Amino acid sequence: MMAKVLLTITESNCRCKYFKKGDQFIVKDLCPSICHELWNTIYPSVYALLNGAELDYGNKRLKCFDAKCPDEGRVCIHGEVVE
Image (cartoon, rainbow, N blue to C red; front, side, top):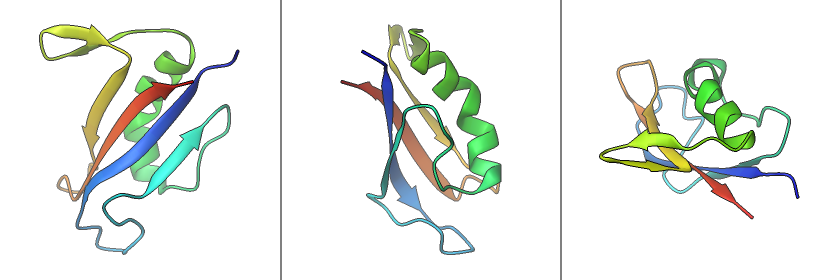
């Protein structure tokens, strides 16, 4: 079964109003409809998770990550592997 990554917007103060808290996207193999700046920031982690990696998450290694938009951290996102 192919891995999927669930992306959830955990905080949003997006100056373009693209996102609101609670928005979710599923990534299987194609880029979801999110802004390029945020996608460029999270793509390496999404790619790693889609290919079976575990990432540093505090003092643990898990199949998830948290990231912030490069535009002053206006959008926070959580990604995790889902079945």
